[in-house]
Image (cartoon, rainbow, N blue to C red):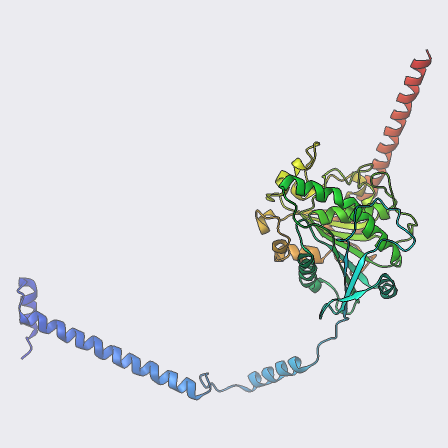
Length: 415
Protein backbone atom coordinates (compact mmCIF):
# COMPACT_ATOMS: atom_id res chain seq x y z
CA UNK A 1 0.00 0.00 0.00
CA UNK A 2 1.39 3.46 -0.85
CA UNK A 3 1.98 5.68 2.13
CA UNK A 4 -0.59 8.34 2.93
CA UNK A 5 0.13 12.06 3.01
CA UNK A 6 0.69 12.20 6.78
CA UNK A 7 3.26 9.45 6.59
CA UNK A 8 5.07 11.15 3.69
CA UNK A 9 5.13 14.50 5.50
CA UNK A 10 6.46 12.93 8.67
CA UNK A 11 9.08 11.00 6.77
CA UNK A 12 10.17 14.17 4.95
CA UNK A 13 10.56 16.39 7.98
CA UNK A 14 12.12 13.68 10.14
CA UNK A 15 14.51 12.78 7.32
CA UNK A 16 13.95 9.07 7.72
CA UNK A 17 15.37 7.36 4.71
CA UNK A 18 13.50 4.22 3.93
CA UNK A 19 11.88 2.29 1.17
CA UNK A 20 9.00 4.77 1.23
CA UNK A 21 11.18 7.55 -0.21
CA UNK A 22 12.40 5.23 -2.93
CA UNK A 23 8.81 4.32 -3.72
CA UNK A 24 7.89 8.03 -3.95
CA UNK A 25 10.79 8.66 -6.38
CA UNK A 26 9.62 5.81 -8.60
CA UNK A 27 6.10 7.26 -8.64
CA UNK A 28 7.36 10.69 -9.79
CA UNK A 29 9.49 9.06 -12.50
CA UNK A 30 6.46 7.23 -13.77
CA UNK A 31 4.50 10.46 -14.04
CA UNK A 32 7.30 12.12 -16.01
CA UNK A 33 7.48 9.20 -18.42
CA UNK A 34 3.74 9.27 -18.96
CA UNK A 35 3.78 13.05 -19.64
CA UNK A 36 6.62 12.64 -22.14
CA UNK A 37 4.71 9.88 -23.91
CA UNK A 38 1.63 12.03 -24.27
CA UNK A 39 3.70 14.94 -25.65
CA UNK A 40 5.35 12.67 -28.25
CA UNK A 41 1.98 11.36 -29.40
CA UNK A 42 0.66 14.89 -29.89
CA UNK A 43 3.71 16.02 -31.89
CA UNK A 44 3.75 12.87 -34.00
CA UNK A 45 0.10 13.32 -34.88
CA UNK A 46 0.64 16.95 -35.97
CA UNK A 47 3.64 15.99 -38.11
CA UNK A 48 1.73 13.20 -39.78
CA UNK A 49 -1.13 15.54 -40.61
CA UNK A 50 1.35 18.08 -42.06
CA UNK A 51 3.05 15.44 -44.21
CA UNK A 52 -0.29 14.18 -45.44
CA UNK A 53 -1.21 17.70 -46.59
CA UNK A 54 1.94 18.07 -48.74
CA UNK A 55 4.31 19.59 -46.15
CA UNK A 56 1.99 22.40 -45.05
CA UNK A 57 -0.73 22.52 -42.49
CA UNK A 58 -4.00 22.83 -44.42
CA UNK A 59 -5.45 26.28 -43.97
CA UNK A 60 -8.56 27.53 -45.63
CA UNK A 61 -7.68 30.46 -47.88
CA UNK A 62 -9.90 33.46 -48.22
CA UNK A 63 -10.99 34.85 -51.57
CA UNK A 64 -8.64 37.86 -51.20
CA UNK A 65 -5.66 35.61 -50.54
CA UNK A 66 -6.42 33.57 -53.66
CA UNK A 67 -6.69 36.73 -55.79
CA UNK A 68 -3.34 38.06 -54.51
CA UNK A 69 -1.64 34.73 -55.20
CA UNK A 70 -2.98 34.60 -58.76
CA UNK A 71 -1.91 38.19 -59.41
CA UNK A 72 1.62 37.44 -58.15
CA UNK A 73 1.86 34.37 -60.37
CA UNK A 74 0.76 36.46 -63.36
CA UNK A 75 3.52 39.03 -62.71
CA UNK A 76 6.15 36.31 -62.44
CA UNK A 77 4.99 34.72 -65.68
CA UNK A 78 5.37 37.96 -67.63
CA UNK A 79 8.63 38.19 -69.64
CA UNK A 80 11.26 40.57 -68.24
CA UNK A 81 12.60 43.50 -70.23
CA UNK A 82 15.40 42.35 -72.52
CA UNK A 83 18.85 43.77 -71.74
CA UNK A 84 21.21 45.01 -74.41
CA UNK A 85 24.11 42.54 -74.83
CA UNK A 86 27.48 43.52 -73.39
CA UNK A 87 30.28 43.92 -75.92
CA UNK A 88 33.22 42.65 -73.83
CA UNK A 89 36.84 43.16 -74.91
CA UNK A 90 40.18 42.07 -73.47
CA UNK A 91 43.19 44.09 -74.62
CA UNK A 92 46.74 43.21 -73.56
CA UNK A 93 50.10 44.98 -73.56
CA UNK A 94 51.95 42.26 -71.66
CA UNK A 95 54.13 41.48 -74.68
CA UNK A 96 55.12 45.12 -75.30
CA UNK A 97 58.00 47.12 -73.90
CA UNK A 98 58.04 50.63 -72.49
CA UNK A 99 57.24 53.61 -74.71
CA UNK A 100 56.87 57.37 -74.68
CA UNK A 101 54.48 57.60 -77.60
CA UNK A 102 55.65 58.16 -81.14
CA UNK A 103 53.70 55.18 -82.40
CA UNK A 104 53.76 54.16 -86.07
CA UNK A 105 50.81 54.89 -88.32
CA UNK A 106 49.35 51.46 -87.59
CA UNK A 107 49.64 52.08 -83.85
CA UNK A 108 51.12 49.81 -81.17
CA UNK A 109 50.78 46.07 -81.63
CA UNK A 110 48.12 45.52 -78.98
CA UNK A 111 46.44 42.14 -78.70
CA UNK A 112 42.65 41.95 -78.80
CA UNK A 113 40.04 39.40 -77.72
CA UNK A 114 36.26 39.68 -77.68
CA UNK A 115 33.23 37.82 -76.38
CA UNK A 116 29.56 38.68 -76.75
CA UNK A 117 27.41 39.44 -73.72
CA UNK A 118 30.35 38.67 -71.44
CA UNK A 119 29.82 34.93 -71.98
CA UNK A 120 31.58 32.11 -73.73
CA UNK A 121 35.27 31.84 -74.69
CA UNK A 122 37.41 34.79 -75.71
CA UNK A 123 37.84 35.02 -79.48
CA UNK A 124 40.99 36.58 -81.01
CA UNK A 125 40.35 39.84 -82.82
CA UNK A 126 42.33 42.54 -84.63
CA UNK A 127 42.57 46.30 -84.31
CA UNK A 128 40.34 46.65 -87.37
CA UNK A 129 37.68 44.53 -85.64
CA UNK A 130 37.83 46.78 -82.58
CA UNK A 131 37.51 49.97 -84.65
CA UNK A 132 34.58 48.50 -86.57
CA UNK A 133 32.82 47.63 -83.32
CA UNK A 134 33.61 51.06 -81.86
CA UNK A 135 31.63 52.80 -84.59
CA UNK A 136 28.53 51.90 -82.63
CA UNK A 137 28.48 54.46 -79.83
CA UNK A 138 28.26 52.58 -76.54
CA UNK A 139 28.89 53.52 -72.95
CA UNK A 140 32.41 52.17 -72.40
CA UNK A 141 33.96 50.98 -69.15
CA UNK A 142 37.75 50.60 -69.20
CA UNK A 143 38.80 48.45 -66.23
CA UNK A 144 42.48 48.60 -65.25
CA UNK A 145 43.78 46.19 -62.63
CA UNK A 146 46.49 46.81 -60.06
CA UNK A 147 49.87 45.29 -59.26
CA UNK A 148 50.85 41.63 -59.03
CA UNK A 149 48.13 40.34 -61.34
CA UNK A 150 48.53 37.58 -63.90
CA UNK A 151 46.64 37.47 -67.18
CA UNK A 152 43.93 35.33 -65.61
CA UNK A 153 43.75 37.65 -62.61
CA UNK A 154 43.15 40.56 -65.00
CA UNK A 155 40.25 38.70 -66.62
CA UNK A 156 38.80 37.88 -63.19
CA UNK A 157 39.10 41.51 -62.11
CA UNK A 158 37.22 42.73 -65.17
CA UNK A 159 34.48 40.15 -64.66
CA UNK A 160 34.06 41.04 -60.98
CA UNK A 161 33.88 44.77 -61.69
CA UNK A 162 31.27 44.17 -64.38
CA UNK A 163 29.14 41.99 -62.11
CA UNK A 164 29.44 44.41 -59.18
CA UNK A 165 28.66 47.64 -61.04
CA UNK A 166 26.23 46.36 -63.67
CA UNK A 167 23.14 46.89 -61.44
CA UNK A 168 23.87 50.62 -61.68
CA UNK A 169 23.69 50.57 -65.48
CA UNK A 170 20.40 51.03 -67.30
CA UNK A 171 19.52 47.77 -69.03
CA UNK A 172 18.32 49.38 -72.25
CA UNK A 173 21.61 51.20 -72.89
CA UNK A 174 24.27 49.30 -74.89
CA UNK A 175 27.47 48.72 -72.93
CA UNK A 176 31.03 47.96 -73.95
CA UNK A 177 33.60 46.79 -71.39
CA UNK A 178 37.37 46.78 -71.96
CA UNK A 179 39.60 44.86 -69.57
CA UNK A 180 43.08 46.35 -69.83
CA UNK A 181 45.73 43.71 -69.11
CA UNK A 182 49.20 45.12 -68.49
CA UNK A 183 52.44 43.40 -67.32
CA UNK A 184 52.13 43.49 -63.54
CA UNK A 185 53.28 39.99 -62.57
CA UNK A 186 55.15 39.67 -59.30
CA UNK A 187 58.80 40.73 -59.34
CA UNK A 188 61.28 39.44 -56.76
CA UNK A 189 61.80 41.97 -53.99
CA UNK A 190 59.04 44.19 -52.65
CA UNK A 191 60.70 47.58 -53.30
CA UNK A 192 61.96 46.50 -56.73
CA UNK A 193 58.51 45.19 -57.60
CA UNK A 194 56.69 48.40 -56.68
CA UNK A 195 59.19 50.73 -58.30
CA UNK A 196 59.34 48.77 -61.55
CA UNK A 197 55.53 48.81 -61.88
CA UNK A 198 55.43 52.53 -61.08
CA UNK A 199 57.96 53.11 -63.87
CA UNK A 200 55.76 51.09 -66.25
CA UNK A 201 52.57 53.10 -65.72
CA UNK A 202 53.45 56.06 -68.06
CA UNK A 203 53.88 53.61 -70.96
CA UNK A 204 50.50 52.09 -70.20
CA UNK A 205 48.94 55.55 -70.20
CA UNK A 206 50.40 56.15 -73.67
CA UNK A 207 49.06 52.83 -74.97
CA UNK A 208 45.62 53.34 -73.48
CA UNK A 209 45.47 57.01 -74.47
CA UNK A 210 46.27 56.10 -78.07
CA UNK A 211 43.51 53.47 -78.10
CA UNK A 212 40.86 55.80 -76.64
CA UNK A 213 41.88 58.47 -79.15
CA UNK A 214 40.96 56.05 -81.97
CA UNK A 215 37.42 55.71 -80.65
CA UNK A 216 34.69 58.13 -81.83
CA UNK A 217 34.79 61.40 -79.90
CA UNK A 218 31.18 61.19 -78.60
CA UNK A 219 31.87 57.84 -76.88
CA UNK A 220 31.18 58.09 -73.12
CA UNK A 221 34.16 56.55 -71.32
CA UNK A 222 34.52 55.64 -67.66
CA UNK A 223 37.95 54.62 -66.35
CA UNK A 224 37.74 52.14 -63.47
CA UNK A 225 41.12 51.43 -61.92
CA UNK A 226 42.64 49.95 -58.78
CA UNK A 227 46.01 50.85 -57.22
CA UNK A 228 48.48 51.41 -60.10
CA UNK A 229 45.53 50.97 -62.46
CA UNK A 230 44.21 54.26 -61.11
CA UNK A 231 47.55 55.90 -61.93
CA UNK A 232 47.29 54.59 -65.49
CA UNK A 233 43.76 56.00 -65.68
CA UNK A 234 44.61 59.54 -64.56
CA UNK A 235 47.71 59.49 -66.77
CA UNK A 236 45.54 58.60 -69.76
CA UNK A 237 43.10 61.41 -68.99
CA UNK A 238 46.06 63.79 -68.65
CA UNK A 239 47.34 62.83 -72.11
CA UNK A 240 43.89 63.07 -73.72
CA UNK A 241 43.59 66.61 -72.35
CA UNK A 242 46.80 67.59 -74.17
CA UNK A 243 49.21 67.01 -71.31
CA UNK A 244 52.64 65.38 -71.49
CA UNK A 245 54.39 62.62 -69.57
CA UNK A 246 58.18 62.83 -69.34
CA UNK A 247 58.05 65.53 -72.01
CA UNK A 248 56.06 63.50 -74.54
CA UNK A 249 52.41 63.74 -75.52
CA UNK A 250 49.92 62.09 -77.84
CA UNK A 251 49.61 63.23 -81.43
CA UNK A 252 46.29 63.89 -83.13
CA UNK A 253 44.22 64.57 -80.01
CA UNK A 254 40.56 65.29 -80.79
CA UNK A 255 39.66 68.46 -78.86
CA UNK A 256 35.93 67.65 -79.14
CA UNK A 257 36.26 64.37 -77.23
CA UNK A 258 33.60 63.74 -74.63
CA UNK A 259 34.64 64.30 -71.02
CA UNK A 260 35.38 61.11 -69.13
CA UNK A 261 34.51 59.82 -65.70
CA UNK A 262 36.70 57.91 -63.30
CA UNK A 263 36.19 55.50 -60.42
CA UNK A 264 39.50 54.79 -58.71
CA UNK A 265 39.94 52.52 -55.70
CA UNK A 266 43.05 52.55 -53.45
CA UNK A 267 44.77 54.85 -55.94
CA UNK A 268 48.58 54.50 -55.95
CA UNK A 269 49.11 58.08 -57.10
CA UNK A 270 51.06 60.89 -55.43
CA UNK A 271 48.48 62.98 -53.60
CA UNK A 272 49.64 66.22 -55.27
CA UNK A 273 49.76 64.94 -58.86
CA UNK A 274 46.36 66.36 -59.84
CA UNK A 275 47.31 69.96 -59.05
CA UNK A 276 47.98 72.29 -62.02
CA UNK A 277 51.49 71.82 -63.36
CA UNK A 278 51.90 68.42 -61.66
CA UNK A 279 52.61 65.18 -63.61
CA UNK A 280 48.86 64.49 -64.04
CA UNK A 281 47.78 68.11 -63.66
CA UNK A 282 45.53 68.15 -66.74
CA UNK A 283 43.61 64.98 -65.92
CA UNK A 284 40.74 66.95 -64.40
CA UNK A 285 40.48 69.02 -67.60
CA UNK A 286 39.36 65.84 -69.35
CA UNK A 287 37.18 64.70 -66.44
CA UNK A 288 33.50 65.26 -65.93
CA UNK A 289 33.78 63.68 -62.48
CA UNK A 290 36.11 61.39 -60.53
CA UNK A 291 35.35 59.27 -57.50
CA UNK A 292 38.26 58.22 -55.28
CA UNK A 293 37.51 55.33 -52.94
CA UNK A 294 40.34 55.73 -50.42
CA UNK A 295 41.24 53.64 -47.39
CA UNK A 296 43.04 55.22 -44.45
CA UNK A 297 43.57 51.67 -43.08
CA UNK A 298 45.31 50.36 -46.22
CA UNK A 299 48.49 48.53 -45.06
CA UNK A 300 50.12 48.68 -48.51
CA UNK A 301 49.53 52.37 -49.23
CA UNK A 302 50.64 53.20 -45.71
CA UNK A 303 54.17 52.42 -46.97
CA UNK A 304 53.73 54.23 -50.29
CA UNK A 305 56.28 56.84 -49.19
CA UNK A 306 59.08 54.36 -49.96
CA UNK A 307 58.23 54.40 -53.67
CA UNK A 308 60.73 57.19 -54.34
CA UNK A 309 63.03 59.57 -52.49
CA UNK A 310 60.46 62.37 -52.28
CA UNK A 311 58.58 60.24 -49.71
CA UNK A 312 55.11 61.04 -51.12
CA UNK A 313 51.72 60.09 -49.75
CA UNK A 314 49.19 58.16 -51.83
CA UNK A 315 45.79 59.49 -52.84
CA UNK A 316 44.29 56.17 -51.85
CA UNK A 317 45.63 56.55 -48.30
CA UNK A 318 45.26 60.22 -47.38
CA UNK A 319 43.21 61.73 -50.22
CA UNK A 320 43.96 63.94 -53.22
CA UNK A 321 45.00 67.59 -53.14
CA UNK A 322 42.65 69.44 -55.51
CA UNK A 323 42.74 73.12 -56.43
CA UNK A 324 39.65 75.14 -55.54
CA UNK A 325 38.64 75.80 -59.14
CA UNK A 326 38.20 72.10 -59.96
CA UNK A 327 37.25 70.71 -56.59
CA UNK A 328 33.63 70.27 -57.67
CA UNK A 329 34.71 67.51 -60.07
CA UNK A 330 36.11 65.22 -57.38
CA UNK A 331 34.40 63.13 -54.72
CA UNK A 332 36.42 61.21 -52.12
CA UNK A 333 35.19 58.65 -49.60
CA UNK A 334 37.06 56.66 -46.96
CA UNK A 335 36.40 52.92 -47.05
CA UNK A 336 38.23 52.08 -43.82
CA UNK A 337 35.06 51.31 -41.86
CA UNK A 338 33.66 49.23 -44.74
CA UNK A 339 36.63 47.02 -45.69
CA UNK A 340 39.20 47.43 -42.89
CA UNK A 341 42.92 46.84 -43.34
CA UNK A 342 43.13 45.59 -46.90
CA UNK A 343 44.42 46.55 -50.35
CA UNK A 344 42.47 43.78 -52.09
CA UNK A 345 40.28 44.96 -54.97
CA UNK A 346 37.97 41.95 -54.70
CA UNK A 347 37.08 42.89 -51.11
CA UNK A 348 36.36 46.48 -52.08
CA UNK A 349 34.15 45.32 -54.93
CA UNK A 350 32.05 43.28 -52.50
CA UNK A 351 31.30 46.12 -50.06
CA UNK A 352 27.67 47.06 -50.63
CA UNK A 353 27.89 50.60 -49.25
CA UNK A 354 30.83 51.40 -51.55
CA UNK A 355 29.19 49.85 -54.61
CA UNK A 356 26.14 52.05 -54.20
CA UNK A 357 28.40 55.13 -54.33
CA UNK A 358 30.29 53.82 -57.35
CA UNK A 359 27.13 53.07 -59.31
CA UNK A 360 26.02 56.67 -58.94
CA UNK A 361 29.13 57.77 -60.86
CA UNK A 362 28.67 55.46 -63.82
CA UNK A 363 28.16 57.23 -67.18
CA UNK A 364 24.41 56.67 -67.54
CA UNK A 365 22.92 60.08 -68.31
CA UNK A 366 25.77 62.15 -69.65
CA UNK A 367 25.33 65.89 -69.38
CA UNK A 368 22.90 65.54 -66.48
CA UNK A 369 23.73 66.95 -63.03
CA UNK A 370 26.10 64.79 -61.02
CA UNK A 371 25.33 63.59 -57.48
CA UNK A 372 24.48 66.47 -55.14
CA UNK A 373 27.47 65.64 -52.94
CA UNK A 374 29.71 66.83 -55.77
CA UNK A 375 28.28 70.32 -55.56
CA UNK A 376 27.21 70.54 -59.21
CA UNK A 377 23.51 71.15 -58.67
CA UNK A 378 22.05 74.55 -59.49
CA UNK A 379 21.97 75.71 -55.87
CA UNK A 380 25.75 75.34 -55.60
CA UNK A 381 26.51 76.82 -59.02
CA UNK A 382 27.24 80.38 -57.73
CA UNK A 383 29.68 78.97 -55.19
CA UNK A 384 31.43 76.95 -57.89
CA UNK A 385 31.68 79.99 -60.15
CA UNK A 386 33.04 82.02 -57.24
CA UNK A 387 35.67 79.34 -56.59
CA UNK A 388 36.71 79.40 -60.25
CA UNK A 389 36.90 83.20 -60.25
CA UNK A 390 38.96 83.23 -57.06
CA UNK A 391 41.32 80.60 -58.46
CA UNK A 392 41.75 82.55 -61.71
CA UNK A 393 42.43 85.73 -59.74
CA UNK A 394 45.01 83.93 -57.61
CA UNK A 395 46.73 82.60 -60.73
CA UNK A 396 46.79 86.08 -62.29
CA UNK A 397 48.22 87.57 -59.10
CA UNK A 398 50.91 84.89 -58.94
CA UNK A 399 51.84 85.47 -62.59
CA UNK A 400 52.06 89.23 -62.01
CA UNK A 401 54.23 88.69 -58.95
CA UNK A 402 56.60 86.44 -60.86
CA UNK A 403 56.78 88.88 -63.76
CA UNK A 404 57.58 91.78 -61.42
CA UNK A 405 60.20 89.70 -59.64
CA UNK A 406 61.89 88.84 -62.94
CA UNK A 407 61.83 92.50 -64.01
CA UNK A 408 63.37 93.60 -60.71
CA UNK A 409 66.15 91.02 -60.99
CA UNK A 410 66.96 92.12 -64.56
CA UNK A 411 67.16 95.76 -63.49
CA UNK A 412 69.43 94.81 -60.64
CA UNK A 413 71.75 92.98 -63.04
CA UNK A 414 71.84 95.92 -65.47
CA UNK A 415 72.74 98.34 -62.66
